[in-house]
Amino acid sequence: MQKLTNYRSLQVFLVFMTVIGMSYALFFLQRYMGLSPCPLCIFQRIGIMVMGAFALVAALFHPKSIAVRLLLWFGSLVGIGWATTVAARHVWLQHLPADQVPSCGPGLDYWLDTLPILQVFKEVFSGSGECATIDWTFMGLSIPEQSLIFFSLLLLVHILILWRIFRPVETLA
Image 1 (cartoon, rainbow, N blue to C red):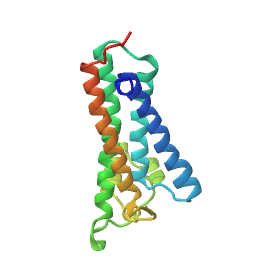
Image 2 (image 1 turned 60 degrees about the vertical axis):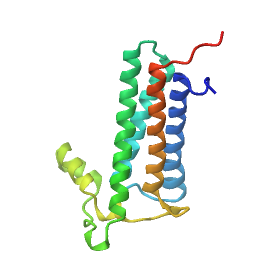
Image 3 (image 1 turned 90 degrees about the vertical axis):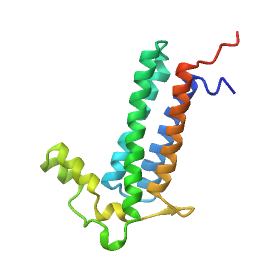
């Protein structure tokens, strides 16, 4: 069991979860189901890709320095923390009463072409009617609710990784 929860194995697990999450989003939801991602979905994807990139670096190079491990862990944590926060906001928007849902505005491409980046973030996080729409459910959970559960579990893995950074597994040689 300790070999499964060592630093490198946990980083590989995060990379694997990134591949699964992105494959689910791109190939199943987007290609197979034909669902287009809203701006909040795109921001969630960015967060999980950031987490996966830091986890991949940590898994490939397996740094020995606690400082480097903490830096990589923090970068990964920022990515999944971002994705979790955006997913929570998305779930909140979906549970607003119909009369309180923000109206639909122009798409993300238009905002990126015409607005400064900070204004784009403000517009995306204010949400739009398209973000409040529930297009598909699985076991009664909307896509953002599924994402929030998935991201929350990955946050728990980050707690285990932090614990492993300061309490490494002894080698059984």
